[in-house]
Length: 344
Image (cartoon, rainbow, N blue to C red):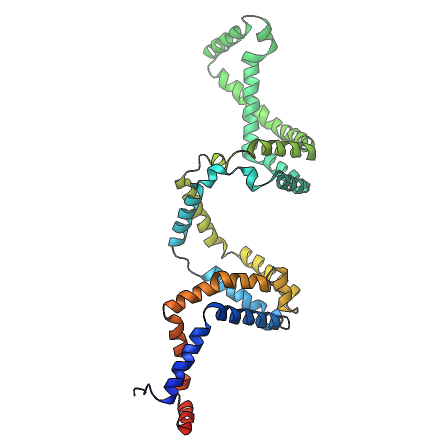
């Protein structure tokens, strides 16, 4: 049944709607929000984190929002486009590395890195033990021995013609005894294989002694001095748009897989457990204060976002429609209309 717009309940409803809409604009809206922010923060001083949520609730939220949420394929595409825009931005050519990271900050990073002595020693040992490095050492030594025998030894250099005679003799010997060259190479490489563990061990000992804190510091800071005045565009030279987008896609695919691993869950659970161990029984204002959330910070964001957004929603008619939906049910209820009918 259509309601009579002239009946008292409908008239009061319209007045109430106008009152509420008028209060949600300009200075009145800001005053309201400032008051409510203050009220909420005052309440937060007497409410603990554990009263609002539990560890399991937070973990379930992370599971839903971070781990299980299906991400649209447009996300990596958009991320790649954004990364390309950043790479090609004019600021890349006008900004030096030193404008982003100061020399003092670089020095601080180096000093902290030098504290990781055990990790540095372990990394050197692992590099030395890697088969690729061992093969590299073997090939370098082999080439060095061969070059020395036929070209660079002292006798060849000091006596004219000896080097040529040695090469000539090598060719003649190979003709006289086919396979002699291969036999020499095989035996030399067999000797290198037997000697390689000792060579690696001695080279590792040398590096461990040579890479002192002072040497590492001087080397890194020298490299920094050579780069700090170069622009970001110079440092990114060779990284094209296609390669950058491929890296973005690889990173996105890694994240999709990584977020479902037991390792990610274990790390997340450790963080959440620590959060509740530290703040669970303390007022929420302690947590907010430690992360820098103050009344001033909240009001700055209210001025920057909340008020402009509400202004747009009001201009589009959403605010009035929302208020009308909220109030109409009450004013059109039998209980409210009975009161108005009794007064009329």
